[in-house]
Length: 400
Ligand SMILES: Cc1cc2nc3c(=O)[nH]c(=O)nc-3n(C[C@H](O)[C@H](O)[C@H](O)COP(=O)(O)OP(=O)(O)OC[C@H]3O[C@@H](n4cnc5c(N)ncnc54)[C@H](O)[C@@H]3O)c2cc1C
Image (tube, rainbow, N blue to C red; front, top):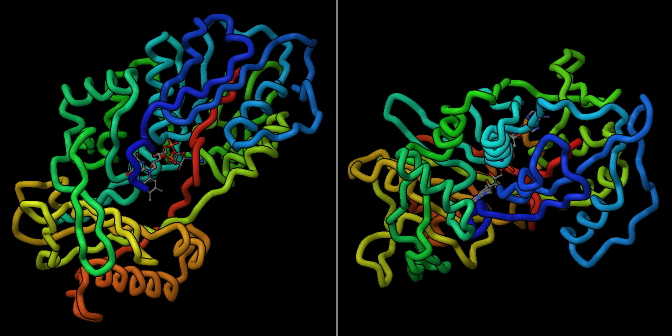
């Protein structure tokens, strides 16, 4: 869901004891929503145990209760940590990639494991359909910068031509076609060829990062001071430290065998909301209201429509010079609509896909103030269901 702060700094690291060979600053990971748990070495060769299995009294917010749990519970390893540790990062979305970059900066080797068949990036997904080409960012739409460390990183991306400012008009669209543009400051950034190409190029200059994909880490076993990773029974290596840089069922499952029951339980309590994305390509431009703006909007937060919360012209955003068709739009649903039409993400029944497509296109008509059934038929559509955390914490870091 595009928000002005969802890809930005979130320094929420919790440090109880720093990893020996690294400077403590290593732990102040600045990329989004990363919580840090440090584990120490003390007992002889034994599987790690929970240091404190007391039930925590949860604080007022998820974030504070997670912090509390993280300070209470640590895995204890016996063997000293290697002077040249190797870290496994499970998840090659933005959190995992920036974590790998930070480790590289400090001379620490890492391997990023990611399930992506088409590339890295996770929820920074871009779909390109040749030969036209049709192009859609189908989850993260843009990001803003409000943190100095992140700003430094983004400046580097700007210099390398990986990101650009999205200068199109963005605003609020009320049901019936009432559009009000929003200020263009702070700047909104997008990947030059979409979000996924940005993610894919982030590690291009690294020498200490290894990428393994597509690979779904199904199990991690802490044993004798190392973490053993496997994919459906196939060993994927042993590591001094692991970073779980994803959330949801998969992360909960991995945590279940980590020896951190409190944290595992706590993470299960995080609520995910379901968001449908509808990608649609049209032959002709959509009848966009200008409102007070001098030209049609390229992105709008939609209000008062049950099925749509966001719409963006991805052709204009990513291929701004192209004025003729096709016109590629990404529409995102509201969380309430996602919840009502929730199905297994990996296996969307055709009937649901059709129903969601019709419901969201109906929502587009309502938002634009068009008569029912008057919207031109898109010649290409695709729906996808995403899971997104309602509030915070996308990645979290488990470090030994
Ligand atoms: C519909 C939607 C729209 C959004 N719009 C915006 C926006 O406009 N602006 C913004 O700033 N943010 C937006 N966000 C939020 C933003 O996309 C996410 O916060 C961010 O991309 C999350 O990055 P991440 O690295 O934490 O997780 P992810 O991007 O989810 O990456 C996790 C990766 O780990 C992989 N993985 C999971 N389990 C395993 C495993 N066991 N083994 C190996 N790999 C695994 C996943 O396949 C995935 O590739 C949006 C999100 C959604 C869903």
